Image (cartoon, rainbow, N blue to C red):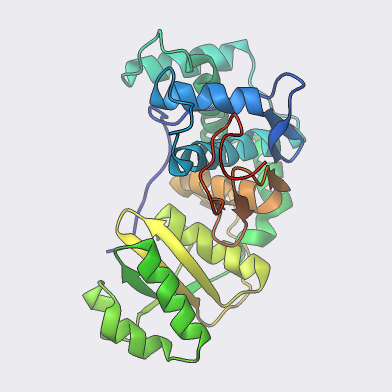
Length: 295
């Protein structure tokens, strides 16, 4: 149920912002800095002109920030190894996006081209991509041996974490509450699988928990609901040789990029949870112009 062979080859819904200007910093990803003005523009590109006001939802801002972190991390990692998109790469990315259905007049096209070009370079492989993979391969050198409890809401997942923290048994809670019947009867156990077997958010959270030395992680969102994940039988394995990754390469690089970058978010927008691999919203409402959520 939770296996996926998703390979991000064409971006048609994600949006990016280039680092620019000298206004306050909203996000830092490795050596890349995104300012508040760029974030504001990106939110408006995502939700329409005038969407950045006192009614702008925290979830909307966090969704945009998650996208920015993920793909700017890939660009930053490739640049660290001397690989940056040239004019021909960007033109080819533009053509791919338009063929995939993107409006050529959409304001965010130029920044989407940067993301698409980076993914295209990853898919093409080459010495620089291989060097980037081998430099960070330790973070993906693990068996993915897990159990999980699946519920429909984030609040339900948080409540389960509280109950586990109070000493309740994971297997008992899985049998009682998990909406994945196949694993619930086994106390939530999913067994072991190689990288590239699980849906991306689930897999990234497992790798993040391993990198942080955690044995429990959540709530983890996916298209199926929210997961509370227990790390079972953690063990280091030899990372897969670069030449054997094939169609798994883009997904592995996306995981590796956020696991190997220093990431910092302006607290008015949220915090970066390196274990789960996402931006966690602040306690109150937030918007890119600083309305709500503190200052």
